[in-house]
Amino acid sequence: MAAALQATLRGTLACLSWLFARNRLGMLNHTLLTVERILADGLPCGGVILNNPDGAEDEVARENRAILEELMEVRSFSRLSRDKRL
Image (cartoon, rainbow, N blue to C red; front, side, top):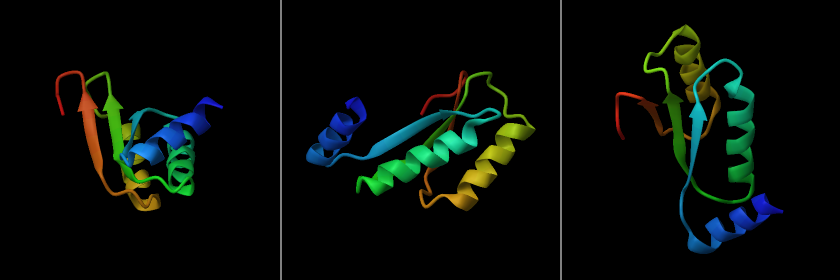
């Protein structure tokens, strides 16, 4: 119910949806499904912000980013870590 209300509100306001995802092992499926749903609802997706709360980007985090860039229609990616600001 809350997800449907949020989708309706975003559609009414015509604003971009931005997805923040913690860049760690296991985040790929959730991120892909969430972006798929945003687009299926006919809403514009501005991009995915990959959150690296530990500050460092390890091998898994780099692979996640590369896989998402390859598989998703959304092309805007950024990295957010404890020591950097958008």
